[in-house]
Image 1: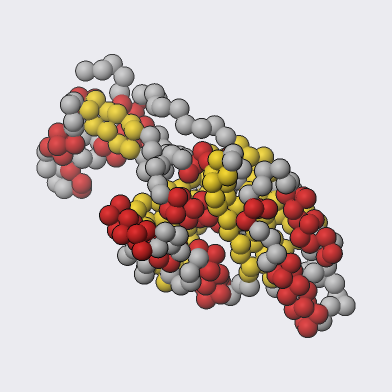
Image 2: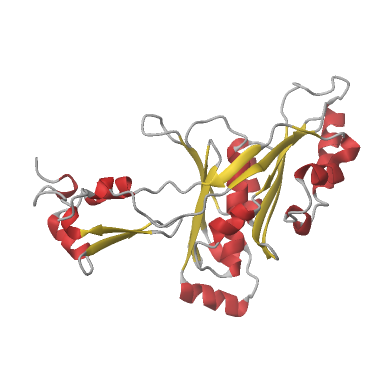
Amino acid sequence: MSETPAFLDSGRPDVPDIVVPRGVTPFFLPRRPVRGRLVRLGPLADALLTRHDNHDAVTRTAGQALALVAALASALKFRGSFSLQAKGDGPLNMLLADCTDSGGLRGYARAVPERLQALLDSDPAPSAMSLLGKGYLAFTVDQGPDTERHQGIVTITGGTLAEMALHYFETSEQIRCSIHLACDRTASGWRAAALILERIAGSGGIDPDLNEGAQEESWRTATTLAATVTDAELLDDALSADQLLYRLFHTEGVATDRARALAYGCRCSRQRLSGILEGFSQDDLDHMAVNGDIVMTCEFCNVDFRFPREDVRGLADGRAHGQGH
């Protein structure tokens, strides 16, 4: 038996140590009922998306989900994680992305190869709706085991992931938004970005001379300007966030707030996985072992954790999964 217990064995393959200092740039239109966030993942997108060997159509959807969840998480005050989960009956039957309050970002997409290929044979550039099919979209704030989770769920509605998110905000939160998501493979690798505008409710910070009609006109102007942005602009590393926002909204006097960092944020650990294994019976553990090792793979970062079977004690017979006394 190894002298090092599984939960103390910290050895694991390296994962990317990437931080994008200005991953999220909050902005607002002074004295107008408009605020927003520009998210640009830069090389972080490539590091996250290339952990799995997915088809480009799946990778684009996963990248858009990462950008979206980073944008939404940065608008909330919470401690923990904010996640997006889309689950449907289409070839892409699971899409998950989450972001911590400190900007740690992770995600994965799971597709059924045969069904995906059948879809691609008929539609080489399928929409998010075609990939996901019928199902639900859930947004969850998880602040730990001692706090009740806050979750909003809606049916998948809309052709794109942006339209699905808009449907959620219109029906569940009654918040008026404009959402543009982009993800594609560039000369520098995969890139993902999001531009989100939100209509501010109430009168705080708004020009008192703007009546409701004038405020509505300001909102329409802002969304019209936002709609002129291209995917190429959003994904261009050479075009800074400040330059892009000025290009879009300079006629409205755009101003930026303090930028927030985003980082490679998978939270898997040998200790956590070892704790899960210790909850299985000896027979279950024996069946899991292959050539003397139990291998657990993190779905997010695609890292394999190997546990020698002899190092994992498990539960005594009859006590597995809460059975017995």
